[in-house]
Structure formats: structure tokens, C-alpha cells
Image (cartoon, rainbow, N blue to C red):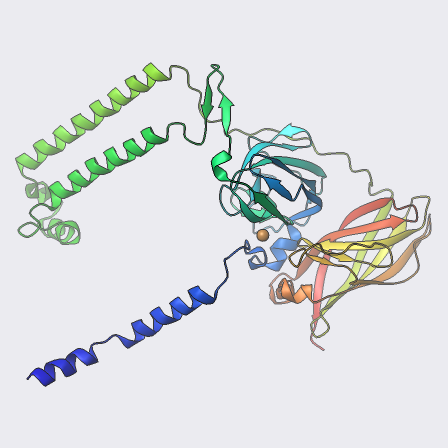
Length: 426
Ligand SMILES: [Cu+2]
């Protein structure tokens, strides 16, 4: 008998669970800390056709706790914003992408307008932003500008690594309120908040315990629902005793009284309060210094050759400036594809999405007053590693990106280009 029992026990050892646990443990040991933001998880089409971020700069990249970091740059919301997605023309908020409250935001501006509130942006227009942060928690963080678009979610911009040194205990986060008091936002109201949470949790638990007190004799939760269904709508009240009704009314009375007292106490200590400001503020777009009249670009025949990881597009460019123009860069989905013959830009770290020699131009520089056809070939492994190739498998294989042209004095002209991308499997 004993033997059978021990045999049965042996058979009960949950091997699959054990295996799963060990695998999870091994993964935990082997996996490095998760630092990325899932930049490439978003659909390629969405990353290419939402916001064209450029001139992104974060400085300084190494600061001590309490020191400031400035994120600045420009963006042009794509004229080809996907129609199935909520638009930036409705409601958007300029934000920062870092894992947790490692910084506090001191200020943020778009075209000089303070961005405490939400706003909306016009498609195809130029905006310049600046966000000032103050370092809070020591560590190394990948810092991105982010645009939170209502209904569409966060649209992440290019990133740089920022190191924060020092000790969080030294962090100072004091503000002077409109009534002239100086408060420490790191601890202000914290004990009251914790006490209120504990207090209301206890009341909630007591309330639930009261209804569960004789669950052996009376059905609760789903069995109660079934019992009510059986009794019918008109007789459902029969399940509640007069004592229970009395306790219910008493509880409502107590809660309303407590809320009233809390309100009176708050009024006593903080007589002047204004609600959190969450409105909408208009932002005027900037004047684009390189208007369509100066440089016109027409896209025809865009193909993506899968085996060569190469994107080819034929462009008809009209140069109305007074100097010859050459293509220096094609930027899309936060990746900068560079023509090494025109620009010398190298990635600063392995996560910096720059392909420093990936653009080849077949055709001569476009002379002033001329319209000519050039072939642009953009070839790099980043198409694959950043999962832009998935565009080919989209029901809407439409690409967009920024084309940067330079004259021989280094003056820059930019345009958004877009079109249908046809895949080539050979
Ligand atoms: Cu990141």
C-alpha cells in the first residue's frame, strides 16, 4: 500500500511546470536588462509615414543628478499620415521616452509655445521643439522625444544614450506655489496619500468581508448571480435581509460623511486650489526656409529588392536655387541613410541609426534652373534589422521619408518624398 502511494506521488511531480520554471530561471539569468523601447516593434508603414523627426540633438549626454539635459530638434508630420490611424491634427502631446521617472521635465516648447498642454499639428508643416529635463535617478538611459497622439499612441523619435551620475538622495525638486510656499515635490503629500489609500482599502475589505461572512450558507458572487436569475427579477430582493439593508445604508452614510469631513479638512489646510491644466493650446507652424518653389521633387518607380536589401527610387528634381544640388541624405523611420560623397556622418553608438555610406546616386548634380531625373539607391542592413522590409507585406506598401539636398556651400534643402513601393523578390 505504502509503495503504491509513493508511486502515485512520484507520478504527481509536475514535470512540465518544473521544466517551465527552470527555463524561465535560465532566461532570467542569461537575459540582459531590457533597455530598448520596442522602437522597431511598430509597423514599418506607420514609422515611415507619421512623423519625420530630424536634427535631433540631446546634450549634454553625461550629467550629474540635478543637472539639466536639453532635447531639441525639428519635425514635420507626414503629409501621408495613414488614414486608418488617429491623426496628429486632432490632439497630440510632446513627451519624452525614458524607462520611468529618471528625469523631471523643467520645460518644453514647440515653436516657442509652452507645451504644458496638448495641441495639434498640421501635416507637412515644420515644427521646432525643445525639452529641458533635470536628471533625477543615476543610470544609463536611452532618451527619445515622443509624440503622444490621441487615439494612436506614442510615436517615438530618434534617441541618444544619456548617463546620469551621482546619488538620487541629492535630488532637489522644490517649487514655489502660487501662494508663495516652497514645497518638495518628491515628498509633498506622500504620507497623506499613503494613509488615504490604506484607509479606503480597509473600508473596502471590511465591506467585502461583510458580504462573504456566511458564504457557506448563502451564495455569493457567481452562485448568487445564478440564484438571482432563478428567483426572477421581482423576487431578487428577498435574498437581502433587513439587517444587511441596514448595514448598507449605514455604510453609505459613513462614506458620505467621511468624504464631507475630508473636503472640509482640505479646505482648511489648502484653501486655494486650481485644477490640473489639461487644455489645448494652438501652435503656429514655422516658415519652412526651403519652400516647394525652390526645389521640386517627384517620385516615380520605387522598388525594394529583398535579396539585396536595397531600395531604389527614381526622382525628378527641379532646382530653382542658384547653385547645383546633390542628395546628401534620405531619412525614414528614424534611420538616416547617408550619401558619403556629400556628408560625413558616423553613428555615435551601436544604437544610433545611421547608415553612413548607404546612398548611391546615379545621375549628375542638378544644375540651377534645371529639371533632371536621378536614380537613388539606398542599400543597408538596417532595412532588415530595423524591420522596415515588412512594408513589402503590408496591404498598403507605401513609403515616405525626408530627402535632404545640399548645394556646394553646404546649404540644405529638404522635402518629404512618398510613393508606392513595389517589392522585387529576385
Ligand atoms: Cu530607446
